[in-house]
Image (cartoon, rainbow, N blue to C red; front, side):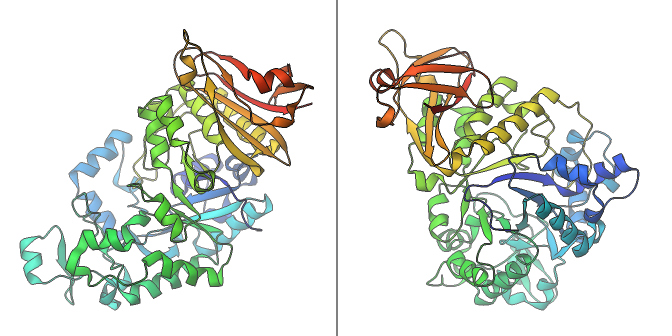
Length: 491
């Protein structure tokens, strides 16, 4: 597989659920090496550059036992799947015992077969890495206690939820600074030189079987965050930040390996500077869901180079389903918006067909839900047309939308353009439930006085406009509630 494109489109798949459902269709147990070609085709529609197989690593039996004993988790499981059974609970994919492909999924051979299928389609493979913690039955716990945040007998007595005694050492349970400890994981020490070297080694091995990793809660390992979380227990912060030390070591072995950070708390820019190719854009997600179009526009005023290294999404395994939070019309408008923005784009398996149940990652079975075939066709057409246009190989720019004294509906619109070897493209999205009109100022001085044709991407709708009018008055648009335009602009 050659290097992924500069701004990849990623499709996240819950591996255990997907394989179980594939086995139900084929009538036999299915590992990663047994997936029929047409099923691979379904998760790699035109426009998808990489598949993220979420949850392939060996899960912790001890972590699963802890989950089964947790009343709050069991309630969440039955809320998602009413008839859930213990046999449907696989344990958390982020409570990892070892970075070896789970035997139930076909082991390493199955993963290599899966990667070969993706490679034949020109699609890359992303996997998970969890840098902050490991399972309590990880071999590291007994073999390398120096990798972990340590405590003492008094900590166990005072805070049994936060510390436990392995028999050889007292170790802290994993946590972030804003929530109680997670009961099923053990906290690694980001300041320990031995842990940093081991992390680079593990990521180097992972890089042998995939094209990139999504690093879970990557900001927790940053020196300042880790020091605030653990204080003196972690020891003195090293001069070099965790990721600034680890990522160059891995890239010496795998120069083109992609690193995407799950990141929050406005630390995206800092993590980009520490070596990550991409960071989650949770702020955009929150603004689309809960704030005004003007707030979304304000977010998109950021520097283009920064935005090209963000991951845009409307849902993922941690967030509620977009069909539930957005509704069909807003979801379509938002999908057009993020599909035509700079940066990586993340889509979640089931999002295209309108799934509404948010499944806890512990489960490997989900409820049956009707497929919205019209929504599936919309998404596949959108991805294919954006990809086929080549627009995202150019340079992107946010555009001004101008209204009138008696009509301020232009504030509801988000407009942008791409300019590059593939041509000129304009996207306009009405991110509101009311009609909106505006004049959009285009940046292309070369429009001159020719007549230019605006063609709706992948459609037969065409509009002729004078270059002089476009340059002086701007492009007039009138969109219904949640309406969109994606135009190519050519003589």
